[in-house]
Amino acid sequence: MAEDIIIDIIGSFADGKTTLVRALTSESTLRHSEERKRGITIRLGYAHFFIYKCTKCGAFSRHEKCEVCSANGELYRRVSIIDSPGHKTLMTIMLSGAALTSGAVLVIAANQKCPQPQTEEHLEAIKIMGIKNIVVAQTKIDIVGAERAKQNYAEIKAFLSKNGFDNVKIIPVFSIQDINITDLVQEIAGFKQEEKLENKTMEMLVVRSFDVNKPGTNISGLNGGVVGGGLKSGNMAIGDKITIYPGVFIKNTWKPINTKVVQIQSEFGMETKVGPGLTIGVKTNLDPALSRRDNLAGSLVTARDSPPMFKNSINVKYSPMLEKEKAIFKRSIQKNETILVNVLASKILGTVSSLSNEKLTVTFANAQLAYYLGDKAIISRKIENVWSLAGFGIIYD
Ligand code: ZN
Image (cartoon, rainbow, N blue to C red; front, side):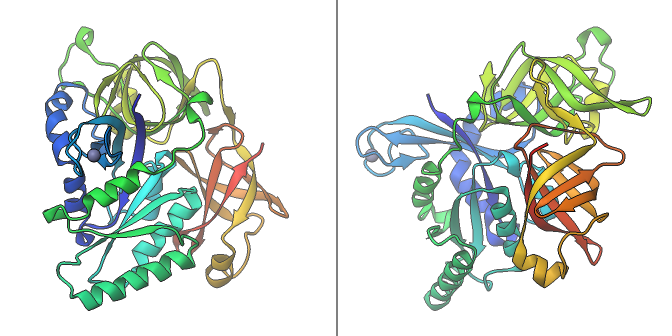
């Protein structure tokens, strides 16, 4: 059975990200576009491709026919690329599903000095999210001389090393001519999946939600609300009874919503049962008005029979980014400080209501957070009116 994996391709339009994605995905995107048009529109993932493993030489290819020896291959992985455009802020990148990704391709252009501030910010996010599978695609080597390409390579190497990524490969690519893309595919095929996530409690992170009905559809023909995102852990199948948190705000309190999985669609078509590693759109029995215009973005979906914690405060074992604390924030986190907390797909303002050693209690005034013990909380602090990553913590209560 082929494994599913979500990766992030990080870089800006100017770095050559778009052409690289095109080089990776051209064939499979064409093949599946018809199928996608017919199904419920999800527009969540950015693109996708297949990786085949050659039965003769063992090389990985984007095509069934081996790109090295031309023998036939077997489907090895289905790769979904999650969208994180270079111009979006760091917070948005996280929200658009970094918690769902297992690996990242960092696109760095040779015609600029490395690191650019944005590249630095991206690597910071990768570190804090705990993403360990990384490869660098060095682009624009065709427009700089050999001398500059070499110099840029050394800059990238030093930058990675400074951040503790000494073993990350740097692959110079020329996407339009399809040069070295195969090398990049070997690296992506080698990305290690997390430990058996499908055996754990089901956690679906909702990053988008839709009403897929055309205006004027009569009630009997209405499709239920659609939530889009991915599974962080566990499994989901058609017919499953699920609950969406925090739900709806009624009479000053949050009320989780119960519904049922009616249909599941991934980038690759209709699915009957899914695990982590796919971007999915899930059609439910919900009133579509509830899911309209990303209304449910940031929600957590769980199996009805294993409810999460659902509280207005959390206790976190906190690991600050010490160097940054010293250089940028000038002091450690303070009692009563307002902080921004990202847990799963949600983003909530909270107040540090108590702290001792590395333990923080964060209280949310108008929100209730759904989580399981052991989930990660990403913490940002305000510096000169901008939220800046400060550290992360594991929720222990
Ligand atoms: Zn081969």
